[in-house]
Length: 148
Image 1: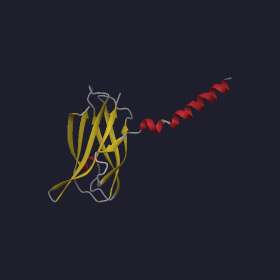
Image 2: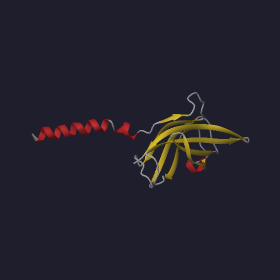
Image 3: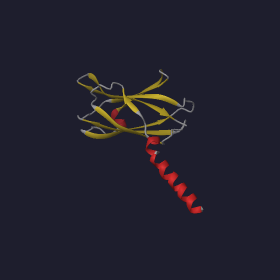
Image 4: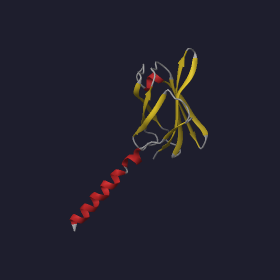
């Protein structure tokens, strides 16, 4: 009887592990699906996986580019049900190593989220560059963040 119960528990554990990638996935979408972005987002990982209010979180954004990037800025915009709450801007070279060569790279951003925040809200991130005194949008994405 113990063997059957143990096998059942192991089977349930194995099935639950199949769903683990879906639980850890962070959904995002481009602001303009038809846009020709220089920086393409391949995936997003957040550590810890469930963000805790008042505790640090690190956002790892796996990206790729078809052209070298030597400078720019990362703009992070937070909204809740369409209402703008917060915005910050960082030099791109603080979020990743510069210059960025053609190929894959990771943007890494650390943030301590406020103690009093809604359980889910939208984060928009745009990567902007400056070339010959003209600003060009490199990439923009929007995602939902759910926390404990």
